[in-house]
Amino acid sequence: MQTTHARTIVSIDLIGDLDATLGSIFADTLTGLIASGTTDVIVMTKHVALSSVEGLGVLDAALSTARAEGCSVRFEPGSRRMKAALTAARMAFDRDDVDRPRSARHLMIARHAARPQLKRTA
Image (tube, rainbow, N blue to C red; front, side):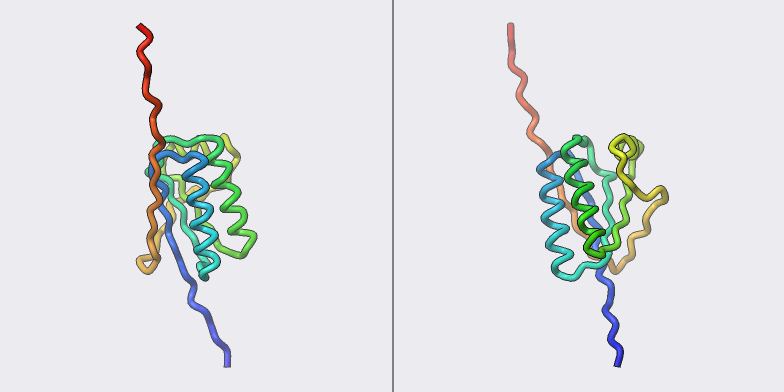
């Protein structure tokens, strides 16, 4: 008797400022999802306002690790600004819109970095 396992699909929206902290939260979440049996991941960054080199580096490492562990990863930048940042960082992303199946679990991970207070000098 042959058994088949249903594919578990999770779509993840990153929201806010993609810095090292948001990247680390995403990486930890993705590691946990894969450990619990997730086989397909869709990552969307259309709601990312700002991105840093460190954040993109952590994101790229997490996606590479997921792919190495056999997880199918689709990555949709969503905005021209994110496409430009990903191209500059030489990160691969899907050029076409990614269809998110209705059966997919949807997670949103948000972080807004604290803005430094401006000091008056006069």
